Structures are given as C-alpha cells and as structure tokens.
Length: 392
Image (cartoon, rainbow, N blue to C red; front, side, top):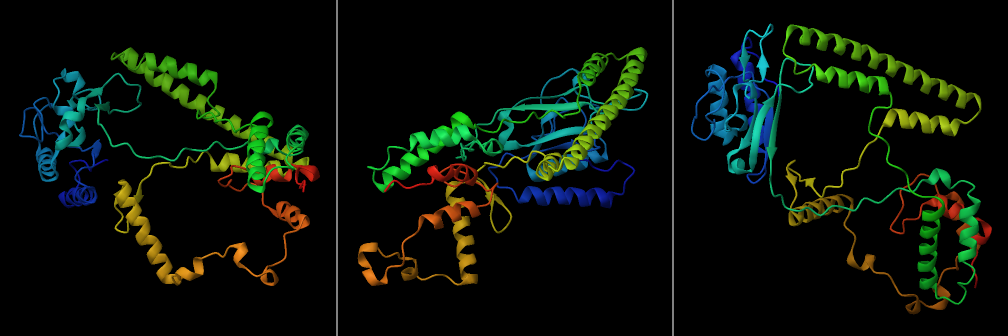
C-alpha cells in the first residue's frame, strides 16, 4: 500500500481511502485482515483511544489525523505504535542526508485481533536497498483448520519411454492372475503398476526455488554487502553503496550469461532434430513454477471469499443448479443405469474386443492428469503386448 505524499491533492487521497474502505467492507467481520504500507502520514507520539498506541514518533500532522479517523471508522489499530520500543525501532523513513527521521509506514490490524499481535517494530539494520526501514509484525492467531487436498506426487513420466525394466517387472507380476475375479485382477493390476513405477520410475523432484543464475560469487557479494548495512557512518554508507552497485552489475552479468547458455542449448537441440526437447525446454523457461493452490476456499457469486465447509457446499450447489438450468437439467430417470441381468440378451450390445482396448490405449494423449487410479497413460502404453494381454 502506498499513499500519495503531502504534495498530492486531498481529493486523490480521499479517493484512495474510499477504495481501501470498500475492500475492507467486502471482508467478513471475523476475518483477520491486515493492511500495511507507506501511508505518508504521521500519527505522532501519544495514545489515542483504541486506534493509536502510546509509542509513536514525532507530532501528528493532517494526514495523520485522516489515518486515525480512517482507523476509527474501520475499527483498526496501528500495530507498530502499541509496544514500547527505542526510538530507533520506531522510525521507518529518514530524510535524505539523515536530516530527519519519521514514522510513516504502518501495519493496521483489526481491534478485535489486538491480543494476537505479539510485537511490531521497524528493523533499521535490515539489508534493504531503500530509504525506508523494514517493518515487521509477529502475530499468533489460532485459525480454524481447513481441510486441504492431499497434493499427489507427480510421476516422472519422462523416464517411462522405452523403460524395459518397468515392462519386464510388470510382465513378471501379472503371470499368475488368471484365477482371480475381474475386480480382484483390476485391483491387483493397479497395485502392481504403482509399485513398479515407484521402484523403477519414481516421482518428479522439487525444483530449487533459487534463481538459476545466482552464482557463488553473487551470494558472497550479498553477504559482504549485508555486513555494511548497519554501519551508520560515512565510510559505511559509501562502502554499502559501492557493494550494492557491484552486486547489481555482477547479477546482470550472471543473468545474461545464463540466458546465453540456455539459448545455445536450444540451438543445439534444434540442430540435432530434437524438437520435443526444444518445446520442453521452452516450456520450462517461460512458464516457471506455478503452484496449484490446495486451500479449500472459493468465492461466491458476490465475489466474497468463503471458507466454511457448509458455505462452500452451498456455493457449489448454486453454481451447478444455475449451470444445469441454462443447459437443461437432466431428468432423474435419465440418470438411472440398468443392470446387465435386467437387459434382454438380444438387446445387449457387442462385447469389447482386445484390439479395441489396445487401440484406445494407443490413442490416449500423453501429459494428461492422472485419474483416481493414479496411473498415467504413459504407463499403460509402456506395458507392451504382453502387459495388455488378458489371461482368460
């Protein structure tokens, strides 16, 4: 959050406060909402009812009055003014030339969650290349436990191609299944596929979240720069600025070299005719790691986030009803499935041939998400002729 400075028009500031207020109104009363940023306001030192604590800094200005009135209207409190701290732990911005220090960055918390805030203060020694100090709040909230989907591990399907060990292991396991019933054979088949894949193929490894162009030299330069962050002398500031410029040049150089190597690798793959690996490499470089959210929370038709299980169920019910009403809701009798024993012999369709099953497996697309059986199409295709045979 960044509000305009004192040079801006009051109408611009009022409009931004209204936007923040509208966002807060969309949240439920029991939600723990935290608003933080550069408010360009000074609430000053001294307690003011429930909104401001006694340990601010300086004198309140007009923008500070506006911020306090906003907190009073929204039932918020300024968290980094309620704890007794040294004044060096209160200021968040210093004027160029260190001619003045002010507290203009705040963390706002709902008053009903006041007891959850354990500490809130600024950290002037943090390694941040800014004239603002880092403001940190520690809070302990006992949240309701949400049911989360257990994230399923992804198979490393690239290792499936022409994996003779996996195929031979499956053929050995499926030799003595002739005497089993259909359901037992299917259950045994799924278990064997998963066990063989776990043993001979494995799962994808988590990729390192560190930027790939971050070299050892860059890390060492970062550590050296961090040592001079808290040295508040003329020589210390000069050394920090110098190291910061050197680190920026080193980072740009390492990043450019890394991209050059990636482009060279793509050219070599293209020259060798491996277009499949080229597409995989481009996908890896451009898409990045997109983590799928596993939180059981959705937005209802009004755009409000709902987390309660009953509310989520009701939201899905409304959505499905609306969806089927548009496309034509199916009748109950249309959803009923007849048992095979209730169908006359001459009305039954033809049986499924082995060739049809094999053809269906061959036509399955690679790279699709697995179903409830946790078996991707690549596994079925790699079973070979013997692995797809029936023993009856």
